[in-house]
Image (cartoon, rainbow, N blue to C red; front, side, top):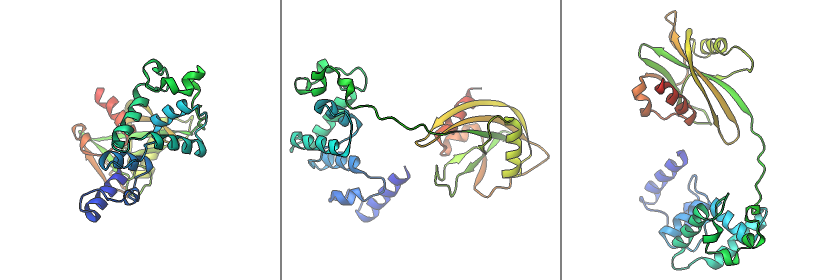
Length: 267
């Protein structure tokens, strides 16, 4: 979303709110890759550029009996698509290929009997269309336990903005952080909130647990309702504020926090 916003601002300022005529200028915008450029310019400007998204890769891998999506095999796919693409209606062709993959040539249980490519499909002829392409093994990612506190002051709770962070920059979140395994969660949360934010709290009750996966790691979050004690006030070197439950949607939070909010609002 941040890159999209940056790209839009550049288009408004540099290109007078219109897409660049030269596709290479469009590719140079933040967050724009080959797939996005091919989709936009084939549909908007009738450029004869094949789209190669996940669905199209699967269709063509089965058609050409490609087991592994190496750079060489991707070039084979693009070469075949370049011979097929309709020069007059390339956008329609690309959308049709993506639709074929998303509705007919499915990852599991492909509907080969209604596929328009069945007569020439190498994967169907082999009797094992699911063998193409082979699934790529994914390396296991690390998972980290995280504690958060919903710290109440009357009917409002504390949120912090992730200012200066590379990951989830400028989003809002609940106070907390990573913890050590096999330790008392309540005591760790009390110590963490005191050390990081100078807040003395008592734990009221556990809200719940959620898990969330990012691209390179995952987190298990346990969250507790907390109450400030001893009249302590937060000392925080980042933006913060107190909000009510009905104000949650006014702020941008990570998806993991929204999972917690759903549990919190249901209780």
